[in-house]
Every structure is written in C-alpha cells, then in structure tokens.
Image (cartoon, rainbow, N blue to C red; front, side):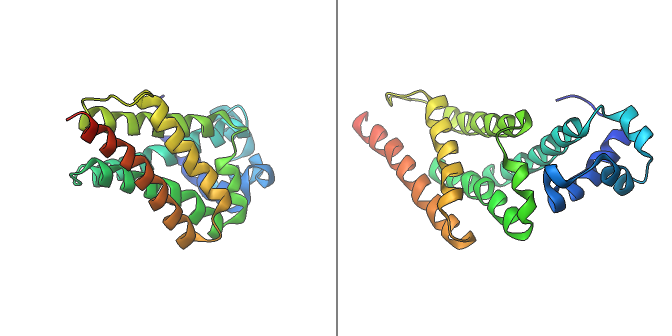
Length: 190
C-alpha cells in the first residue's frame, strides 16, 4: 500500500463522506475540495482526478474494515467461526451502507479497479485463515478458489437480500454450507 501525505489523507477522509453520500457519479472535484477545506487547484496538486481520490477512499475504507475483522477473528477459535464472522461483517458492510445511503452503491461497483482489489484482498484474507486453520487441505479446489467463490457468492447474495436481516441470514447459510465442506473433507481424511 502506497504511503500518503497528511494532506492526501485529510482529503481522502473528507472525500469518504462525500462519496458515501453522493456516490461516484454525482460527486465533483469541487465537492471534495469544499469538504476538505482546500481549493480545486490545490486538490489537483494532490490527486490527478476524481477516480484517484475514489481509489484512495476505497483503499482506506478496506484497510479499516479488514483490520477490524482481523481483530475480532483473532479472538475466535474455530475456523467456522472465523469464516462466519469475517464474511458476515464484510458482507453486511455494503448492504448497511447502501441501505443508509443509496448512492453509496458506487463504492461496490466492479467498474472501478479499486473495488476489484477489495475483493482480492478479502479473498487473500480468507486464504490466510484457511492456511492457518486447515493445514491438511484435500478439497479438489485450491484455497484461493474456495475463497474466491465464497467471496463472490457474498456479492451475489447482496442482490438477492431484501433487507439487512435477510442478508445476514443468507450469509449465515452460505458460510455454513462452505464450512460443511471443510468438515466433510476433514472427516473423510482422518
């Protein structure tokens, strides 16, 4: 992750609120400059365009989210519990944010490379859990494939969920089914 100056960080923090409220399409560089308390020319000295700021905001939000999830997962013993907690928090975040701010849906739009990177980082996070807690991996798919389908399944559930409680239930079922494959694999091998 690239190191950002204090001024860039200040702009990104201010821009987060603007992007959450208005989404990418409706947010202007002028909106971001106003929120950060700087001029548009000063903003362009820090970031070349709106997408660069958006990418930084997404990266910042993701780092914060993964750190929070990691802290909680460290206190959970079972691999099932770790996966369930990680997927629930990560999967519900977008639904909760979009529920409160409908224009925030842009924060999860795959058109943006930064959003695709969020999914890749979460998959890597899940792979690390699996490497640490399922050392004898014998499923006919790799840990990375397991993590990718688990992660993208969460994305699909977002579109099916009727509300936050429904999403939580869908995530629970989704992760339970994936967890069962780990248990079945473990019992078949020992």
